[in-house]
Amino acid sequence: MNYQNLRNELRAYYDTTSYENAEKFLQKCTSKLDKQYVETMSAFEMKVLQYKIISEECNPVLFEHSPFYYETGIIPGFSDGTREYKDHKHAGGWTMWKNAEQFLDQDRALWELRVKQTRQLLYLICGAYRDASQHFQINHRPIFEMGLKGVYEKAKNALAQTIDADEILFLNSVCEGLLCVKKISEKFAEKAIALSKKFPQNPHYKRIAESAARCPWEKPKSFYEALNVYAFMRKVIGSLEGIGPNSFGRVDMDLYPFYEADMNAGVSKEEIYDLICQFLVTWDSHYDHDMKMEGYSDHELENTYVLGGCDLEGKPLYNELTKLFLMANKEEKIIFPKIKCRFSQHSPKEYLDHINDSVTKGTTTVLYQNDDAVIPALVRSGRSLEDARDYLVAGCWGIFTNCNDCRDDASYMNLLKVFEFEIHQPMEIMQNCNMVFAPIDEAKTFEEVYRNTCDNINILFKERTRMVTKGGQIWSKIDPYPIFSSLMKNCLDTKKDFTDCGTKYKDDSYMCVGFPNIVDSLLAIKALCFDEKKYTFFDGFFRCTCSAAVDPISNGSRLT
Image 1 (spheres, one colour):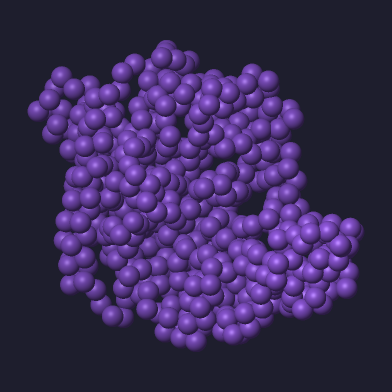
Image 2 (spheres, rainbow, N blue to C red; image 1 turned 135 degrees about the vertical axis):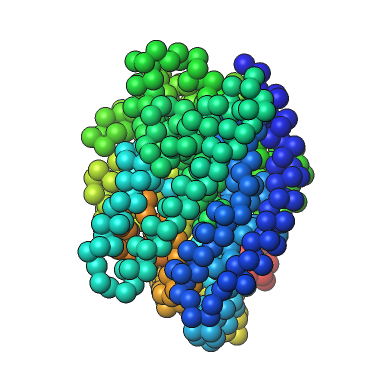
């Protein structure tokens, strides 16, 4: 089918109008929030005020050629929902901006040290300490199972059973927030009713009016409604919380019951495929594919979904929905959302051939993830086997168990910087960063070189862990995420926000930048200096010990 009209309409909105709308709304909303702000408010109370003002003031956008309702008119087009991205802000960041100075005030010396460390590119933190605004996975399963109404009732019941002040703040914020989500959905219904009267020939408006009046407050009844939940919650969570969700989850697993029900009810496969194509085209039209790349992540929308892998019992997952998503991606030449394809030695050959098809033709946006490696690794790290089998690949390439941990997959650790410092020994810089790495110059054996390098890397791990642990403890006092948290596994059970480690798993993971380079460098040192003995360590230099012509590596300069 031809979706050019849809692409043109969406591109026109996201290229210019979305930025204008977001800026106007930011000014209007911030003014109202500042006027109603009271200094004694807790961060949870501030977030509730933010929810209410945004939901009251938002004017949802419906598109003539789109069957979906999702665009709140609050977020700039290129943004994934994060409150501030590429020099563009939106109103969802008000609570954070109002309280951000507290991160610095709690320990100025700690903050100054954190700045020194990150300026030396020793590690990356997407926030002040651990207060990420991107890389979030929305758990849509509770909505599919009981609707937001069921989540609201669970929070209400938990609220009635606690007298703890912090738990009351959190649970009350959840309830108030979910009602604001309901209000936004009802606004879509009201707008669709008005448009359907004005344009009775348009089939989308009537469908939206009927669906938005009940879903996602009520659980979806059809494949269309379930698919729209992904679109709606991505934009609404971004608008109200000021954070960027970056995975639609395991679509061929979670949407399959709705697909099956629709097929049994007489809906054709062509209708399902048409919806999938329009859904993918929607997200692929949020930015200009041909824009010039001038800086980091200029072509990164942090938007993904997962296909394949195995089910919770370990059986290979490959069904009609897997095929339809792959086909739509290929035929419509979709770049975003990116596909994360899980596979294993048990994956059907048809599936492997299907996901390799684009690669063999020279283009792909597919990322491959090996279950046979990942699942055992997750189990070793303390995840249950069922949770490990249900893992997501999200963001750029981070691995998460499905919506039950509270960590950021952009915790990059620069191992190459450690290697550089242990060789060049910039003592003043290392002391200023509170990380003095032992030299390898005087090592008599390769084992000493290897041990020193591992010990130095461990210094980096320990210092970053100390930094984010000490500095990030007040995250929930600055910018909690009650609506988002209500959908995460365990947060309503523990009565704690995501930012207060309310999830099932509470550990972190580090992304090691330069690991292969370190391995290659160590192997080179081992071979040249200790096995072949062509070079020796001497006062920080590699000296040639053979009578042949001097190799460039021994030309009086330190190893880089």
